[in-house]
Image 1 (tube, one colour):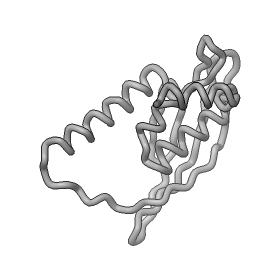
Image 2: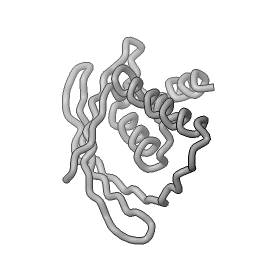
Image 3: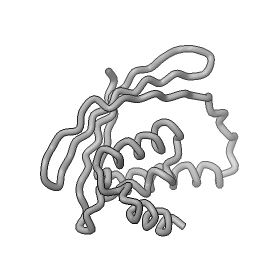
Image 4: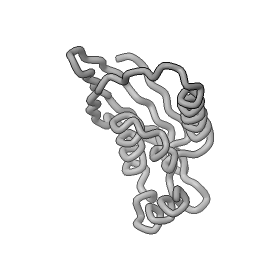
Length: 131
């Protein structure tokens, strides 16, 4: 299923623009909290990190322990920069995180993208920092 999604994205040219790939990754990972879908936009260290996260959540669910209640969170973002040349790009984002019930967190997301041999772009690594 994931392979089919990747093929469709690549066929539509959606993976040929580094800014578009970075934005889609931020949508899936930060806004939708969907590591599985975000995985389609990654390679290397970023893929390993998401697989680790997916494994930990699956393991926690299998353990049968008490299920954590997740707080509803809204995440808004804006891309502040996309820099680099050749096969490497860096994308910087401001994240505005608003938990249900009040409060606000501001973070920055730092993405490193690389062009794959097939010409498509992927997020190779990502980190967050407090603003």
